[in-house]
Length: 434
Image 1: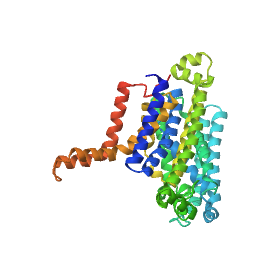
Image 2: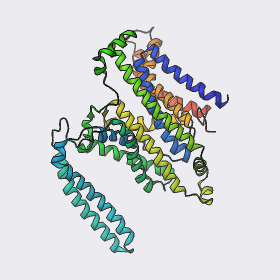
Image 3: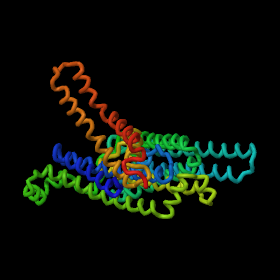
Image 4: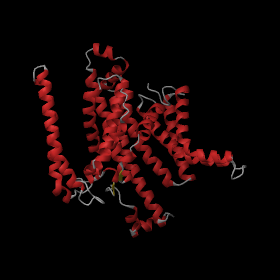
């Protein structure tokens, strides 16, 4: 089958599955799958930029997604004035001292002559700077976290519209990617994977433990939304009248309205990023990136700066993941650092890219929708199938009870089976790179 026919056919199949979910289960469920599918497609697109374009094996995806989520708190939540008065300036001063200590250590190491004295001087500067940093910073943190810890206990944000957090999430992720890339992109692919995974875990650990930043594991709830709350719509007489005229009750209509609004916003972002990724793929820069991916030695022999180009694509892909993380936190209306699990934000996104087609932007988008649909629907469908299969057995039959209890593991089993089948019969994915 030609690619020109296969691509729209596969997308039509996924769309049909989502529509069937709306008709057989509920349209709320279908729209929820669609919204998270759009976010997953953006994450897969970001990973495809790194792996499909440049062959960079990044397994620290959840760290960049988490930074996108953090951006929503920094941008949209109102500032906690009492916390700022208690210790906000001390925290900023402590962070500035810590950054200055690191910069001073780097500059001294670069400018002092080689020898034992250089190491001693740099070590002394780092130890002294760290001591001063902790002295100032810890006092500010204690003061901030003591301010009404049950509901705040953190500095808050800027109180700006939450849509501004989406690009800022990309900026935060890009900044972290620059720091990681400057230190880790010279490593071999397996060591790069270990480094990115470790740094992602560090980011998550900081978000979980630094309550002054975003309340840690206490979570930040009630994030502002770009769309109205369902309760407000239900209390609007005009909206209720319109819903009734369409044959819907106001409660159902309000949830559908909000989810459709998110679908429209997420679709715009996905289309813009997909168009930019396609233009980059077919540009001279994109051809150069693929040449570097296929043969770094030959590309270096032609005068290409491989390390610099790797850093560029690593930053771009991470920024896309940061945007997706900000969008997901906006949809959830809360930041929960404990929810950033490697299974969901690393393994699952990689399965999306591999199944869809590494190196093909449309393939990554397709994989995002398909794998997320299976991830959500396999467990309830598997439970229904097992109940149907064992309907002739007694209620207390040991085999029946075991099979019913095993339905919760259908997700992992299905992901493994799908991955094996695709790698066996279509190793380059459902939509291979041209």
